[in-house]
Length: 137
Image (cartoon, rainbow, N blue to C red; front, side, top):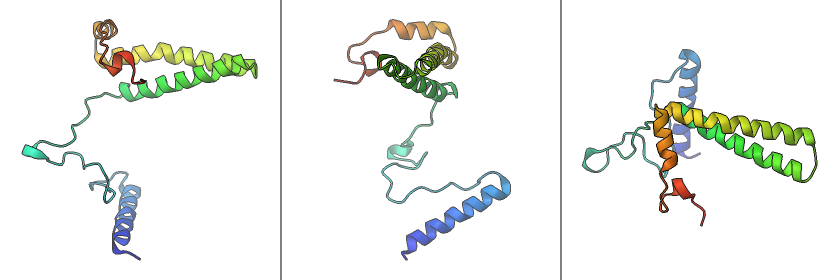
């Protein structure tokens, strides 16, 4: 057995025991050896951290999840309708997609703080911005 595997497994076991005993972990966690990403807050050039702390609130990850689920349900509902496989499935999927489509702007407005910022975001259109046009070419 290689020594790095023993060390990492021992550290992982200690972290699990600490989490089970106290409900939280005080240590820095485990970073895979040779990983292509730096540790958070590791100073890089000029003492500036390589990764910035995220400024998102909890609404943005929820927006991504709800938007992705709504889009997937819309596609499922469309194909269920086109192939006439199950009308109840098509109806349920399209209702879920509608609910997600109505909830996503509310989550974005809540994250931005003011509805005017959301409206400004809809008003701005830049041909060179993947946020305005999309990333597909």
